[in-house]
Amino acid sequence: MSQTFAAQCHCGHHKWEWTLGAELQKHVLCHCDTCKILSGGPYTLNQIVPKSSLKITAGGEPSKYSYKGDSGNSVNCYYCPHCTTHIYHHQEVMGPDTIIARTGIPADARKKFPVAAEIYGKDKLSWEPKIAETFDVLPPS
Ligand SMILES: [Zn+2]
Ligand SMILES: [Zn+2]
Image 1: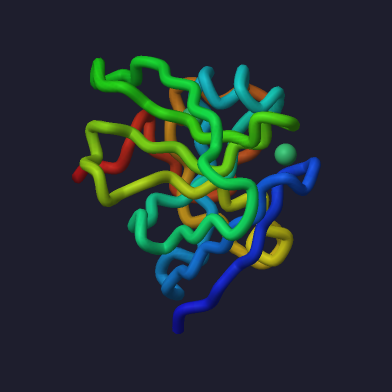
Image 2: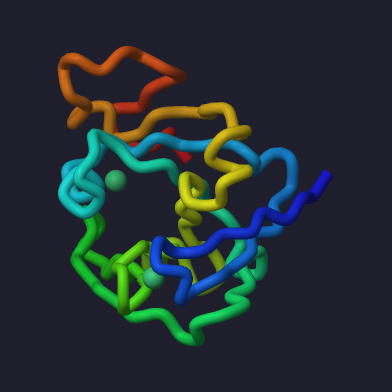
């Protein structure tokens, strides 16, 4: 069953909602080095979701930071211009209708979602325990 998860950035300027089906109510841990640097932690909490599942309810158009992903295509990170909280990412290689939700930000999702998988296991820090099925990079598609 679909459920709506409300989120806001650290300073409260941006507010948004994710409406996600049950199959998407799970964290995917990303251990890539970019996530470590952007977040300051050992991994980030994410899910691949339809763009239509996101509704930005306050703060307007987020700011954008772009870098080149492994595919050579741009990864666009959308964030609050005041506190820099990342709202979502868009990997251009996935097409215009698919985005990456930061599932650690909505309080309900952060606490309730189980971990579905771990990706970029090749960059995982040696002292981290295994939490779920782990892929070297991405699951085979
Ligand atoms: Zn903010
Ligand atoms: Zn990552």
